[in-house]
Length: 168
Image (tube, rainbow, N blue to C red; front, top):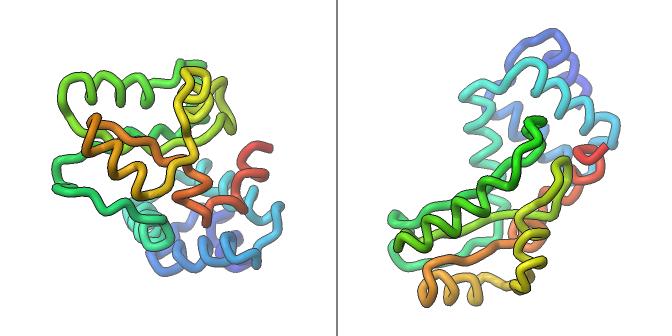
């Protein structure tokens, strides 16, 4: 991890493979909280490249719990990133409701607030929705009502090591 942090601190880009290695080190517990925080900050300061984003996307797709929906090409995911520092409301959750209301099927990923005022899970719980659904329940929700919520800790367990450093 140190070699990658040095590279990032010099504003050099990582390859797709190096990005995947960093994320493996982080999610497998081989990186300290300080190193995780340094990685997040270095990427934010340097700016992510397409290759780094490809590496991260392929890594997290591989690790994610899957929902086997019919016709996945006709499905929208409105996962917000949080932490936009713009003091906005939760746009991704409202967008999911608007799309579903218009007949567009939505698979909504989300979590509790980490760095903003409200995460998708916070809003849905406030509205009385059950957020801890498994893959089969989410699939049924999408098929029956056109929208399903995937609570990040259940569908993206690899991210649990990042929550503390990201919040800090």
